[in-house]
Image (cartoon, rainbow, N blue to C red):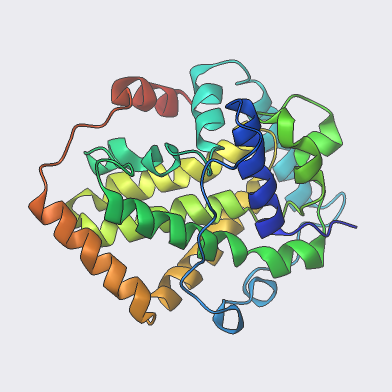
Length: 263
């Protein structure tokens, strides 16, 4: 049985990033609290249908999508997927910078960075009940093919595959940013969707995991609107973006766009 849970995976992920950065004594940053109290987190076990049954048409669809993604191993799309796997480094919140049209980081947009890091916990944690209920094996456990983050393979094996926390986070971040930059809504939501799809290219989630992660994101986003602390931080981020000159994205947006188009 898989018992680690998303927050345990988050802690191990942060620690693994620290080790890769040659700083094993401390994590890259302290994992912040979310905005939603535990008793108010949307119940993913009631929001998503059962995980695809063995040998079902839905499972065969997942396996076909996985096979297609495996063919992209080593391509620019794989590189973007590997970058999207990062939730814990100082650069993590910049994943949607190109879609937003400006650099998102603790240095350039500290209020927005705080908002995204806290909502990440809400979006990710909300997948936990369904993950525990369905206890689904991840693609790399089944096909034994490479995945983007082998350094946390054991942690991923201990966390159910269905639905995808990363997909919930990416799609959720797209919605949060669209509240702040509504004229970029289409680009932001497309990039948030691609952020989730990166998990399929990383060989750590099935297509249905990714799709249902977006359902969880929508429920969490709706619940966030009732949270005073979220609304306060959203307003702080809005004022920050209105006052400060927006820096150009530090990422190579042309290369990212080409990679996503090719995937």
